[in-house]
Length: 284
Length: 195
Image 1 (cartoon, rainbow over the protein chains, first blue to last red):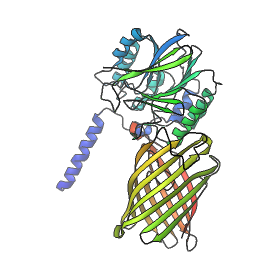
Image 2: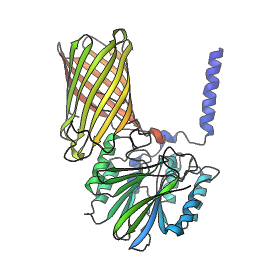
Image 3: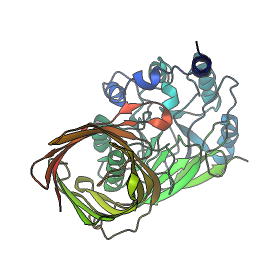
């Protein structure tokens, strides 16, 4: 064997070892259940969606964040959220996917304990990291329920969670979303999902993939007067107002560095006097 | 996309004007996109050409449109191998009264994207030719950085200046999340006349 072939073989071996050793099930990058598969299962009625939490109907606050993304060392910032629960009067929180880095059983156990340790109810939707193992979808739906569902809080604020773990919505989810949005203006509506629609003037690869889907989603958000769409995936903070729709990339609970923005943290919504206000809460 | 009409006007050996228009049927009925560009040959042996173009694309059912400026460098370093790279400035418009205007460039979400194209013409006969492409832009569209579009296209010569064009393509989506999936397969047909 020539030296060049030996070098090529060695390089390929190193790449294989590196890929196998980083903890991902690489086959899932292609063989995962598609968004259409997951949404149809969500809408089949077989999965139990979490119901509305009990809050003071005149005034309540809730937090939204993305990407706890814990690894084997279980480092995350949920403890800092827990510290804010009393001081800021947070009634519940919404976690927008990427609960763990590798979606392994150890990480699953850790994140569920950490989410519960915050001590208040929560809602969840799915992220791409949650599908990084062959049992990722099974774990998510048996732990949290469906990945797209609505919930109405205090008969006034409607939260609609979307499944964008693939960076796509798909036609079935679009049809379902439009049926959920058409409530005649009864509710203040917030959409929560993993991938953002917009990502600034020099967008990273981390926003929704299809121009057609992004523009159709923006059209529906405008048409039905959605107050805000909140997303994660990109570990940063961004607020953009597009035709009266607030687009938030809401910050991260991940231990690692941010892609951009001003520190780790979450987005805090407060409902009072029949209107909804938002505030960025940044960890030191 | 139901139909496209494209015109390439070679004003001189070193200057080319490109124009096109497309119409949709079944979805987003009506005008789909329009484009106008000019290309100047900088180095003829490899066909190195600087192109400046403006595009307008609209999605009538969603009352959304996008206007774009493109600056690209293209070259054909080997027979049948065409390469391009450049920059696009994009202005999405979601205003229900202005999305259809190619002259309205105000937007809340402007953005810049890198452009690329690799195209290999693997068959070339007297009457027809075919090529495979990997590109995030064409005459009417700029795709998102999160997609890797690819496909095939062919041309059949109908007469001295007229060509029948066909193109099919899809895109790999979800790159940033590593959860990959293929997008819809788009099939386009059109005619081209060279003046």
